[in-house]
Amino acid sequence: MDQRESIRTIRTPTLVIIGANDPATTPEVGRAAPGAIPGATLAVLDAAHLSAIEQPAAFAATVEAFLRPQ
Image (cartoon, rainbow, N blue to C red):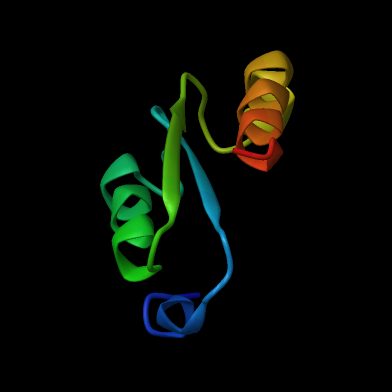
């Protein structure tokens, strides 16, 4: 499931959340995604692959901050 080319077409505000300890989508791979999406925001949580479950408060706060009007 290599999505590196298809994500280059995204033109909407995008939040990429990665887990610092993710063995499936490694942090190195995750950090590349925002570079392929113009204006994307990157958040790194102290979690593995399921950050919404592993760190629900941090995940929710990150998403809420991203969605909050500037």
